[in-house]
Image 1 (cartoon, rainbow, N blue to C red):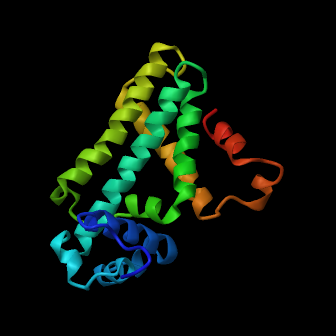
Image 2 (cartoon, rainbow, N blue to C red; image 1 turned 90 degrees about the vertical axis):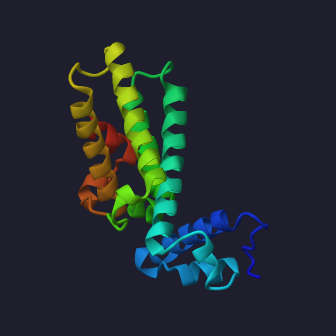
Image 3 (cartoon, rainbow, N blue to C red; image 1 turned 45 degrees about the vertical axis):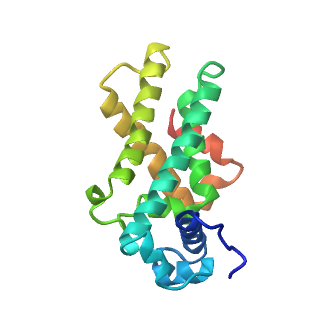
Length: 194
């Protein structure tokens, strides 16, 4: 049994964790059910008791990622909503930090590698929670006069596009060095949301 041995009954969670580790180390291309089984220390057929194929494993990893993103963003929202006027910035910062903590997981979540998302209802439900939370943040900020009035879904698209684009530029190291000199990421993020 491998060092990352699982406890009886937790094989599915152990496989997802191993999948996350492999993603972080080797990217999506390096992920397979066989490699996950080897990492956990089980037979190469054992993952098929929980996942029909690699797509099912990707769905489980993405679902776990979206759940972790939801927890990070909701924790930030609950912490800042009565203490800060920069709630949107703090949510954007939490989103960026989530991506920086595990770029492989983040890239998988938004990569399109998961085909036929509708075949994975748990994934859909969990990813929609993040959209609902963003809309909740927008409504709260509108009620406090912190952001402009308007259709919540259109503002959500604008904000998410901005933070997601910024995050991808950071992850891919695409900002010119001159932009980064003497700046920290949070300052640049604040400028992007000004």
